[in-house]
Amino acid sequence: MRGRTGFSVAALLLLGIVPAAAAGIAIPMDEARIVTFEKPVSTVFVANPSVADINTIDSTHAFILGKAFGSTNLIALDAQGHQIVSKHVSVFGSSSLVTLNRGANQFTFACASARCETAPAPGDVRTWHDDGMEEVEKREDLGAKQASANEGH
Image (cartoon, rainbow, N blue to C red; front, side, top):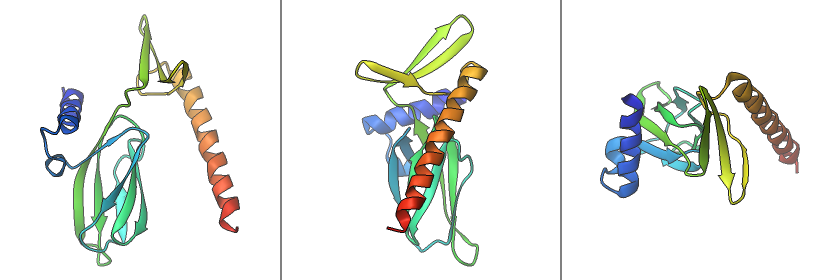
């Protein structure tokens, strides 16, 4: 029931029925948004970094990335450790995800046009999920190494 409620709020947000401020932050999976803080913050934290991740831009702005379907919360503190923001974060699924069920086994794919690639998701067959996540981590590590190498230029 909890998952359905989160999905319903996300669906209503897309339809414009629920104002975004009332529901916190809603973001599509694999997309980023800019969060603006009314007051300067020094610490920003997302409770479940497997659902969403956050990177500060400056003391009043941050990027939030929707990583996986689900919900978590975001807390921001000022330099004295006082809470400035506490918001619910909902990450809703991409319309390009396809779930294949073969008996009790689940496999998730991200499809664009005529091409589909594995997209590990909670509930997938464990070896399928673990192998897919290992590939995702390798790709992220290579990207981070490339970004580090480009910082000096």
